[in-house]
Every structure is written in structure tokens, then in C-alpha cells.
Length: 311
Ligand code: NDP
Ligand code: OXD
Image (cartoon, helix red, strand yellow):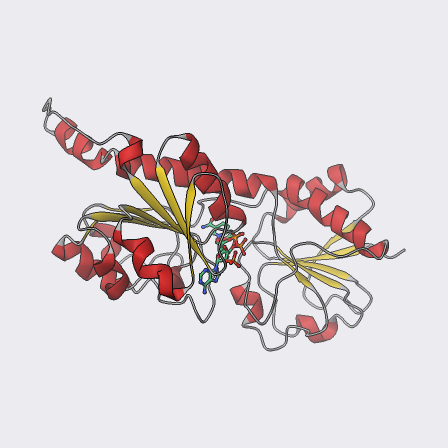
């Protein structure tokens, strides 16, 4: 059985991945992609961004494994083979990392930590109040793998949690809103908005002036999904007017965020460098080896991207 996996993700910790496969899935022949390499007989590929000409050269490809949860870059490549299943990354450590990030940032905005920092910077013992979590409404755009896990954790911390998705959900103590029609109602009470949507033609630019205008004045915005969800100029204007009180952004239209970008110096705008959560090689290697075993046994693959929906 040919179980060769091409690692087509230059700059993505190839050594750590190689060690992880050797440890967790030794049955897989892990091969980092090299320029000029013959890939015609390799059946599996783990990819972040494919080098030009890679897909036509992989003549016996059976499964494409995306290295991330988001697949918009892969889908945008017109040479991506059509008949080959594209499996996106769903692994427990990636989910845990995102839950940790969302909780950290929601608590940061809930408690307006910037006010404490400002007081401390001038040695001032200023009274600082904030509501109890059950009086704070957090809204999550996207209730999939990551959004639903984050919602569950926020519920555990006592927050009022609501989520918006394409189809209605029934998660314990999470108010579900679905579809465009229910987006305005979802937004009206959302004091801390977290974006965990996939980037698709429908969701591109969703974090825009008209959405911000529907939030309660002074709301916080946290984007941990993709830079393409945000209309940057609209956030700048909404923060200047006070409609958005504070924001945390992990993802940007251009990454790394250019040195001269105004976000670096926008007050109460906090930046993390697209590391809200990171795929864990060992956990991912285990998932991939399971999926290959399923495939070989003629079973259905999990987490296959629906190319028509874009996620
Ligand atoms: P999922 O595919 O599991 O979930 C997507 C959710 O978004 C689903 O609930 C889906 O609704 C909803 N959705 C999609 N399109 C629409 C729409 N048009 N209207 C309303 N709801 C919609 O994705 P994940 O949770 O695994 O990941 C989400 C994104 O997070 C990834 O695509 C990636 O871009 C980003 N990410 C960022 C990371 C970082 O470090 N910053 C790390 C990992 C991921 P429904 O359930 O009804 O289909
Ligand atoms: C992902 C990411 O999509 O890391 O997994 O952004």
C-alpha cells in the first residue's frame, strides 16, 4: 500500500511535522516537497499553499489535507483538482487553542483591561467596575467546530452567549440565530462580537459599517477568522466615532501586517500575529493517519470541504 504523504507547506515547521509523523503515524511515508521532485505517484498531500504547478504534477492524488481549518486560499487556486476530496484541519489542539484565545480576549474586553493599564501607568488607584458575566452578552459569528467549542466555554464562565450560523443550532444555553434575516437581531444585544466564520464569497467583508452600526454603542469586536472578513476602513471609522469601543484582531488582509499600517497605532485596537490557534503536528498527524485508514477501508472521510459552500 502506497502511503506517501507530500508535505507542501514551505516554512511551516517541516521538521516538527516530520518528527510528529515518525512518532504518531510511522506507517506514513512523510516527504517534504522539494523543487523538481517527482510527485506523480504520491497519493496524499498535506498543504498550506500549493506551489505553482504542483497539482497537475500530482497525477495519482487521492486526498488533499489542508494544514489549516480555513481553506479559502486552496479553493481560490483554479488548478486545485476537482475530483479529489479536500479535507480541512479539525483537530482537538487547534480547537482548544482557539477556545483559550476567545476566552482570553472576551475576558480582556469584558473587564476593559486597557483601563487598568492606563491607571497603572500613572500610578492611579482608580475604581474599575464591570458587570457580572450573566449581564454581558457575547455573540459568536460562526458556530462550527471552533465557534461552538468557544461558546460552550463562555457559557461555563457564566456569560450570556448567542451565536449566528447558516443553519439553526441547539447548543445548551446558547441562543441560536441563523441566516441573513436573523443577523440584525443577533447583533442588537451583542456587546462583545467574536468572528469565527470561514471566509467565503458570502462572508467576505461582513465586519463592515452597517454591521458595526447594529451593535450596542461601544461594543468590542474580536476577529480570529480571516482578514478578508473585515472592512478595515470601516473599523477605523467605527472606532473613531466610539461605535466600536475596542477590538482585537488576529488576522489581516495583508499578513504580516505592514509596518506603516494605521492599526498598529490605533488606540484600544489589540493585535495578535495570526496565532490565535495553531495546528498541532502530533494531533494532526494522528487525525490524518486515521483518515487515510478510513479511506483505505472504504469508509467515508470526515471534514471534507463542500466546495460549493466554500467551507
Ligand atoms: P466550521 O466550518 O466548522 O464552521 C463554520 C461556521 O460558520 C458554521 O457554523 C457555519 O454555519 C457558519 N457559516 C458559514 N457561512 C455562513 C454564512 N454565510 N452565514 C452564516 N453562517 C455561516 O469552521 P471552523 O469553526 O473550523 O473554523 C472557522 C474559521 O476559523 C476557519 O475557516 C478559519 O478561517 C478560522 N481559523 C483561524 C485560526 C487563527 O489562528 N486565527 C485558526 C483556525 C481557524 P453552519 O454550521 O450552519 O454550516
Ligand atoms: C487555520 C489557521 O485556518 O491557522 O487553521 O488560520
